[in-house]
Image 1 (tube, rainbow, N blue to C red):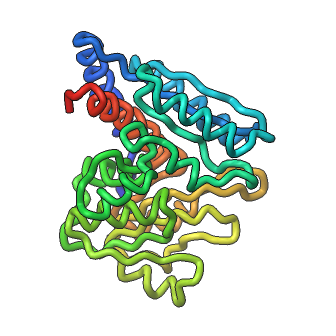
Image 2: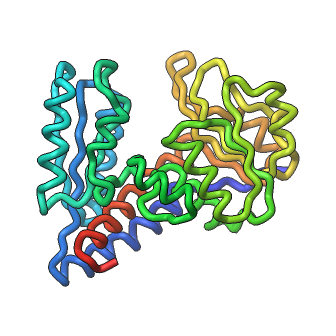
Amino acid sequence: MTATILDGKLVAAEAKKHVKVEVERMKASGTNPHLSTVLVGDEPASASYLKSKHKACQEAGIGSENHHLPVETTQKELENLIFKLNVDPKVNGILVQLPLPGHLDENTVIERIVPYKDVDGLHPMNAGKLASGIEGLVPCTPKGIVKLLEHYKVPLRGQRAMIVNRSTLVGRPLAMLFLNRDATVTMAHSKTLNLPEVSRSADILVSAVGRSNFQVEAKHVKPGAAVVDVGLSRVDGKLRGDVDFGEVSKVAKYLTPVPGGVGPMTVAMLLENTVMAAMIQSGKN
């Protein structure tokens, strides 16, 4: 068996085309979607992620700006900026690039963003809606994973899905999205016992660990499963995903590559969320 590759670049490009058409339609009716991002400090990976997001905004016709704050920025200074962006009628979406420096309280910062501008979908109100089955502004990576699986017609209803991650950014919201589509969901993490044995029962296996000492091998995977690789780590100076691509591709039916799988989908979903936020604020949703 050779796995079908789930091409995130291809699906993301299609999503971006739809976003661009919608942006042009909104502009014609007087709404100009705009995203504001916030970067605290000079972490190279965060800066690189933001650069790709702003480039995607430009290509889609979405206005964007970045607020780059020094690493010594205080909690109050950051919250003051969030308040200004909340009340700025030009700004439709607010994204604070995570992780923040250790002296800043990420949860409090996220709570300071008004829910209808929270394009990361992390505000407790948006998370609560998702938990109750309402899909509004949903975290971008889980949203992208579901769209990628649905594009390739990977069945979700009645399937056993396992997520190796329990974060509020990926694992928890993805579990809700899978449940909304009638999958049976198991969540695993660093303290899960007998992980290979548990994961081999999964029809859909999503790994988002991102540690150099962790790898999903063929023995973890049920023959014919769909495997989604979200993790990123650096080994011998090179970036790699969680999954042993060469070996798992011989067992799985579907498999995402790294790079070119989930990453492009995350950016595309950010654009979708920004447009959705703009529509909510203009009363045109």
